[in-house]
Length: 448
Image (cartoon, rainbow, N blue to C red):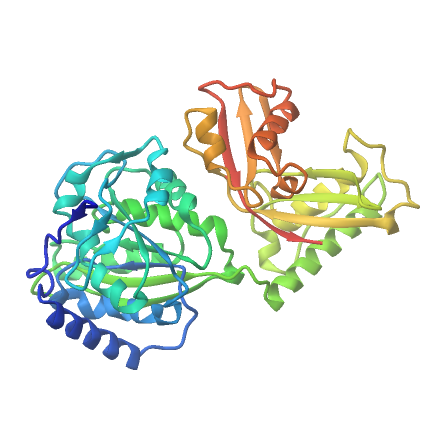
């Protein structure tokens, strides 16, 4: 028989009787749905884990928004803080299911096997045995989503980069929902708690991965989620909904719920942004080998915000130049203009573009998301962690460094070939590996 983790807080944090539990959750969800504002179904949520009599209504305010995802979400990655056992990094169970009064929830063993490869993830049934921060979410998830596989993660002192990597590993598409479990401030004077909770809410809405446990007991998984979300969604593709932080005078523990969603389908604003970036690139190339002095005084604020970009030029389908920035250190408009000019006239692999060629060039602008370190200690871990077609990869070792945009996967679809060629590009042997070799990945928004 498969090993099942028994419910530890049924009958205390929530009703242990199946009928009573189903009725209570349904009532919370119905009340939340009646007052809900129509919003995009979320990709990730943050919800509280106190007893239902305290935070059930706030949890329901977010879980009610998952109704459109029933039948779509097949996997839930559920991460919450360790309360009972000291955990270094993060812990996953060896069990095959979690028990709930509403029925057993099967675990995604394949996904857990992927997480087991991460050096900061341990297998610990002890960490999960009495942990309530994950368990209290199961009845809500079962009531709303019905059928799904669970990936439970108890989080200890994992860093934001580690948790972002963990979530990145299983981020997936519409079939995967991310749930982070956390309450907010604990046992502060009432007025102090309200102020601190508002600051925490602002940090979460701003995708600032700077929370500490005094802000939220689930600071570690929240910081990882915020870092992963920030790398994926710009301001043009981000929507947030939230319930107001609640800090009752009686308990002096605060609860909050929020949801994050994003769409990869470009909006009209995205198309306009892309058109302007392409126009900036072409104008810079049209200036010729000696560019005119530019002030880069753009009218649009977003063009002045620091961002990294690459500009790729092709002629008749063949590469004609590609220059870019891996890290953001100047305004996006200036970065695109300077990289476009360099791709046309200073790429050492090609002669400068001739005036007669300019009209025939196909121009592509890639705006990079912030680089995120890959926590790998071996080549096998690196290859297992790469996501073909999605990851841009940056390699650095001493004075050697190189990068491949995600577009390179089109010609190098095998992860080993991709990594070998990147090492060659960095002037290292194809199979070179050293403990000091560092890899980081990024995504791109591409316009052409």
